[in-house]
Image (cartoon, rainbow, N blue to C red; front, side):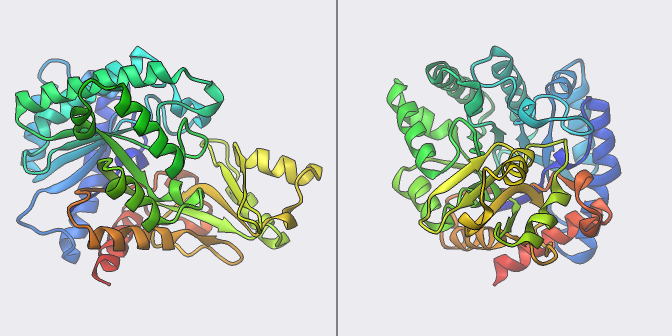
Length: 385
């Protein structure tokens, strides 16, 4: 098991900004973990890198990549995974649906992902291999042509296969289901991969190079059971678990007025905060974003008392305990870790992904390096139990 945290928590769009964030924050986190004994001193510190399209292109210019390899060696660090979901700006502006653009219908997305693989093929240790995570094809509101998405992904699989053979390293792409993504839950994921494999002339290459990035927050919001979902995906359907995002969402009882009032504090304009609410009969209702949910509540078109629980796509720290009457989906993360302990060969790449530090309410705020170190501690302690 390789555990890192995703550097998408740190604002950075150019390569120089990215390297600055590594030096300013990542090395501080590494030193905290070394001091606590959570990072073995004789092993390189694993970095979960986030590169924008701009930063990736800049890193491939001139001798930048060789200089970065020297930086990694000098600081006893290594990169085992890259977050390739957000193409462009991810902080300080309204991201919302832009995080899904360009989608997998676009050659811009293809080129960006190829650049990421060209980078990780040269910097990831052969012992760990290298993974890239990406969006689940598109967003439902884009009404994408799935045949184009599948075509581009199949071509990408062969690109990854050629790089893997050339560099003698195991490389793989993980598609990351998200609420209202082109596929968002266990059932839709299974159906998409079945269609993808049927399209492929060599399904074995697709199975080896195109897998799933299982984000605990996202599947928890869908009310999917972690054990059942992971068994269906990785065991029954033999879909590769490329990476697991250890992430936590918010939950509440919509029928409780104090809970509705408390969740309004998380209504911020930067990111999508999809809401899924469950009725007593188990049926679900989806809302594109928190403002849409509140518009339905405030207008009276939605009766909160019709639902037993709602879950909100707002990543909160893994060790955080929201103030009552709000709760979290930490049980889903715990069950995911338990499943991984029982299935130790199913996935090797794990990444803490709480990117919302800059928009967390004050009650959950603390220095970012302190937060990340505490999340490592939470994960490692849960793996022991």
